[in-house]
Image (cartoon, rainbow, N blue to C red; front, top):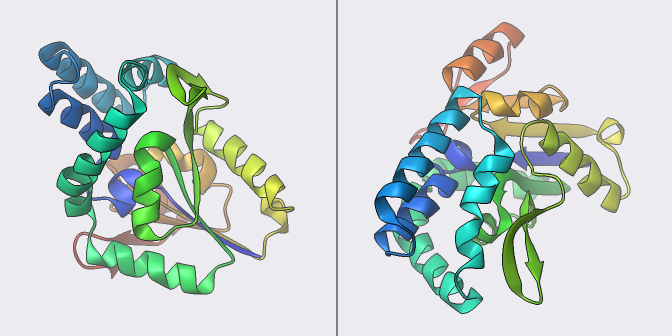
Amino acid sequence: MNLVLFDLDNTLLAGDSDYEWGQFLIARGAVDGPHYEARNKAFYEDYKAGRLDIHAFLAFALRPLATHSREQLDAWHAEYMATRIRPMITQPARDLVKRHLDEADLVAVITATNSFVTGPIAREFGIPHLIATDPEEIDGHFTGEVAGTPCFREGKVTRLEHFLQTHGTRLDCLGSSRFYSDSHNDLPLLEKVRYPVAVDPDAILSAHARTKAWPIISLRPAQLVI
């Protein structure tokens, strides 16, 4: 069995879906603009610097899901997809996904961004599986809490192991495993797969990839292999 994993933000997308969802909520007047924007930017800088407190971030990011109806959230998400997400999807990204969908047994997006935000994005790519941070939901309503292990750093490895168990296999039993990511935050999982690939990587991941002789590619806009 062959597995292909894609990180989402700044990998398949030329931008960050979590950050853009926050900015979208600000633009729609769904959250307190100046305060929310300052915290959204601060958390994003922490993520890029590798010092993000994932639980503090999720307490912040999931709260708006609990304060609005699912009907309203779904309507906003459709607008967000049209105005924020589709413009961040490049043709090289679509082509890469299509190639692997044609060749691999299991293809999944694996992302720290919550599944409410990322589920429709994975479907936009035609990717059948999503491994993401799950917001807690009771009786069809989000609570603002996280359910289970956040899909972040070492948590991505944990969540992948659970995913593979549901498919009757383990990472060390796969014929091939490949993971595309832009971020040094994903090094725990990149080190676990057989074929790690750095995509438009940050400085730390770029240096690590060169040391390890991992492929480095760009999906913005033309795919280049270094």
